[in-house]
Image 1 (spheres, rainbow, N blue to C red):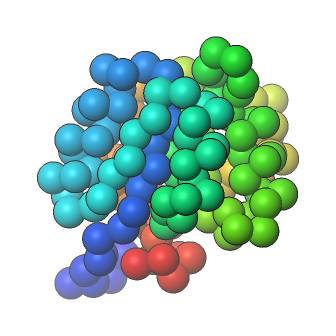
Image 2 (cartoon, rainbow, N blue to C red):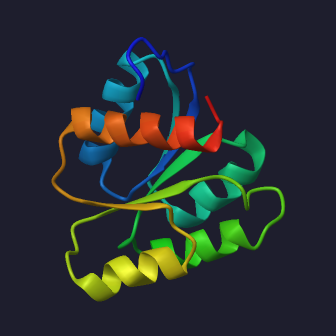
Length: 133
């Protein structure tokens, strides 16, 4: 990111089944000036993505009832959400999971645990690189 380059507030959708994680992410990104929408259910997050039209989606891979790969595939196959960048957040660390993330249409793969500062840095880079700032 260029020195002095300011990121405008973005709409960020966070979909993760662990409320303690989403609360931390929501507080940190809101404090950084972003508008954050949190869903702890994958299907609900998918449905809301079509209404909210976020600038970026932070998506857990392992969730009950559905997984992040399926959600990402559905997002990328829907013309109204296909251009929204998806960042996978996961506790999994196998290289085939990372490959599956990209095959599903994900733009980035972040291993849990991660620092909120690093997450914000990645969000800002993606927002700048996609022109969604």
